[in-house]
Image 1: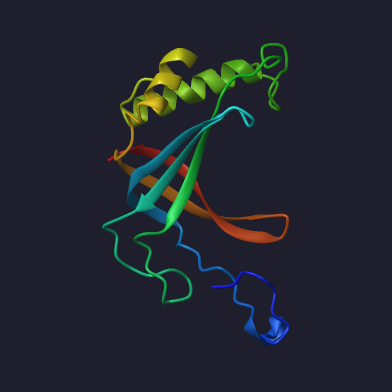
Image 2: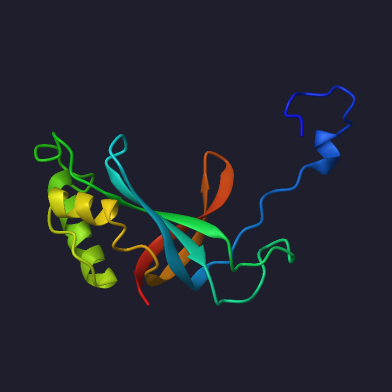
Length: 154
């Protein structure tokens, strides 16, 4: 199989374009199929594969089950302790710690400190967890996509 461009291959972008199918807004069952610690973005990146839901996406063809969706937990970074959040009530550090505590409780897992989080990700402790996710459709920079609004233990 060649990956080089072949000018003999014919296509027409304007007639062949199809928007990516979307999962309808709602609550779905899924499983954790990947967890990474993303140091560059300072987050825990979760990959959820939807399962046992039935139904199809917005194109009326693509199954909902088997689709991948992502969730992120934002981790405190240097400077967050002095920078206030948009609402001016708490520092960014405090908000991130509170969100981690809420998520930890909802998922029935421990996210106590950076060392423990790093070890659990390295050991893939949370891989395979059964979860419920609230999926919503959102628009960002003119592109419509799905995102997980909330995730908790099934």
